[in-house]
Image (cartoon, rainbow, N blue to C red; front, side, top):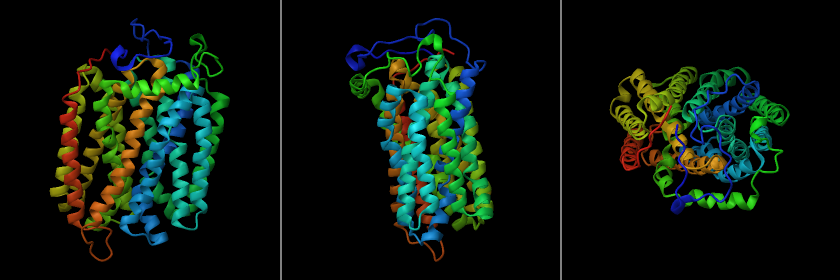
Length: 444
């Protein structure tokens, strides 16, 4: 993958750039799978990221649990589930700043402790307000998990094949998202949701505490470990954040960023479970299996998009094709999903699988800046994307609630159908926006 330095009029960096072989235009180095230091870091980062994905994908299961536990209305469950995402979005920029100042291991260890505390608070909460506070802490705690991992990859391997390496990381990390569907539903049926959240808190604490002990932020020969005094000062980082926003080439990416995670978080994260219960009368276990199938599709998507990007050699057609396929899948769900649970599950799975072109968008954003800006550039995208999840979930709750639901149901077929049509229109618009992005050629 070629690394494009920002032009002087857009984003001239104010910090010195330490180039990796790939950044300097030399031969692309192999993926660092053979380096034990990289593998140890990769494994621990995957564990922490997987726990975060479990929380992010658990909304379809937990929404019904919280409705039953605290007698919540449909209009309230959206903000309750989405509170974690607004917190995660707001934590992106400070997380990116801390990340570029102190490195991956220290940043993710400190933020991970907040996530562990949040899980324990949810487990002990006596009211829905207590659950919301706990979910806010979880969101903040996992805010820099992906950015920190990408920064780790860049410092170990440069920008070479970043989409592929990120895709492999997400593929393994999505196992947590799968656990947050069917397996989580089974665990709650067996042990109750409070013990499950307590166990998640303990596991998060263990993973976070292990990072500063076992992980290096980069190979010693590149002098990128966090103990190196050459790391930028806070004032330099703040100037760097302004440079990110001033880059004109990133603006179309910022425009579509609120919808990067929309299919997964609207379906698996909130509405697929209630939809399958209201329209197709599936029980909790069967709904869990259906959500698991959807998350498997997501895992396949994040693994596939990197090689697809490398083979085509361009980013724009990859993103446009993915967005249009997502739009078509939501239209199929809106007009034919009620006919059969198999059609509904297939349409949901297709929309989630093809929506994972976000790995290409993230790599595109990161490629616009030098390596020292990796945390900030991805953090800006993450800020808008994760905040967009909260906004989209809250707006979707208001939209669905505008149509009266039958007795005993969360929402009506008309409400669901209207939501799916609106999402399809949004993704057709994303394809139109990306068609105007300057073409990015990729060298594998």
